[in-house]
Image (cartoon, rainbow, N blue to C red):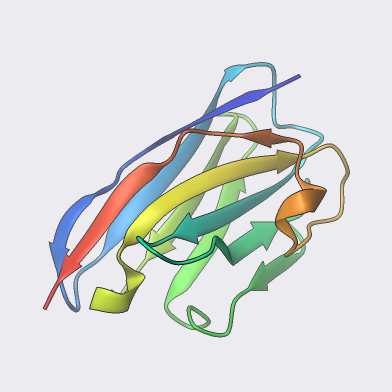
Length: 124
């Protein structure tokens, strides 16, 4: 089993950037596909990005395509979400999740282990 722990959230102005990190406090992500999801107040959780265990395959939500980049460092046992050109509508709690398979998914129920999340707030 693995336990994801997110960090890197904060307050940023529109147009700014943040990099979120997801580290394993227990176990290793080496053989897991990983995903980022977010949930804004009063809204359902939504898919943001996902990456295969090797890093060779990535998926993005249309709303973040071209602005966000997911990548991983399996030596450091960490997955990252680089967020550029942030918009107020990106404000949410961002959660990292691990899937006990190599292939990524955009479906939340495909993931087995979840972190607590980190708050991202984008001011206009």
